[in-house]
Image (cartoon, rainbow over all chains, first blue to last red):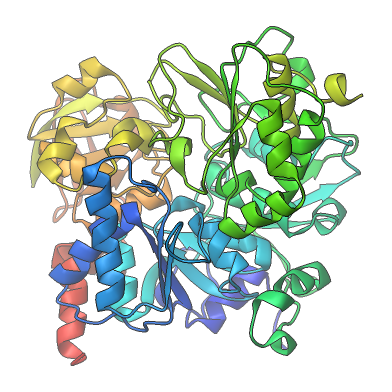
Length: 428
Length: 164
């Protein structure tokens, strides 16, 4: 009888890497390879240099324009044009472009939405937030462009078997704490390299209580602790979310660690009564309670959306704060639904009207200002509150700007008051 | 054998400061090289020249997967990166592009600004002007990857032998 296994060990074994000893090197078969316009540009060049002609499987390589889209200048337009051309030449089945294809949006969100991420799958993406796939019980690994090119050519990626770390949550979070706060609490505990090279598996009742949207927020920031991946077991919640998005719902099955699986390390995070948290610039790991920061952090820009928190749940949370209120003087609010489908749903629910009534700007789905690209880049001396995932120096603009990371409630409260403040002070 | 002048960096040097997001629609290594470390410290950024070896603290290259950061390093002529520890995607990108990296906490802490450092992968040694260290043993796969010159030659070899 074989030993009980973690999710990570099971996924690697199912993809050709049977030896679970951490530090072992091997080649894993991938179920899917994902390129965006930034990583794809370099990957296409490397692919050609490798002497590769065709991608290993036209149905398993996804090309998504999300970083410099819509194009902000001719150079960016040319950049995206090259990805579009490559997708056409390779007859790529999954090409997603906002404004051109009906299914479109930020890569991690649209790939999940279109049922391309399944429990137990292994995927690599040319973006560090590929770990978001863990929300659906898949092992998503962020890699660079040359790894992408190799994966496109061979359908394989070289990997070093990671240590597995169980992150066990307990307690009942407070009213305004969301999935975002669970991962911020984790980062505050382990630090920005506390899970270096490790595969995280998040569990416990607070995780099980989250919907897929909240789980995406958790898994999205696993990389901020240095992790290779961050997974949550696929359960009834996962299957219910996936069922309408796949062709064979009957084939969907729960996927999780075996009972009694042994992890290399365990981290326990108590979130009982948790109040909203914020990551203080310039580190995603410098995490404090919003109400412990003290009053008086004035805010110039509030940015709600992106791959971490651009879900319909986040938009509903923001709308809850904005309803009947206005964006404060001196503040600008930018809202970025993660996909066209989410924006469509937000329209149907009247959320977009609420945002615009309050004075917000609603952006098309794009990575935009999250990485300092476009659509809301910061000037010197400016302070932003964002539901994004990084606040390194200069991340969202000038190197003398700063970004506090928080959930959509905190962002909404900042938008209507002009300062970093506990949402309970606004919503009661 | 790699010989170069040390330029020191701190802890948690992330890829956003190594190559800011505004320049991610650039792929030319020479153009990327002009923006190397622009977000970190303009003085340090200006100082790095061809032949230098970067020596960093913990968690070097944390954050974004952008390979552009390594392209900028190579474009500037950086010969190698030594660090107390590396973030995984940055480490992969260096290995895949054939940029030598050494994870060595003691050496990374001891090497001083502008010191001459010599890395001898064949002999397994790392030497500053005052001290010398043994290189950590390298996994066979990485030795093979580096011997090929990086992932591009490694894949090209595989594709040729499997008749794809």
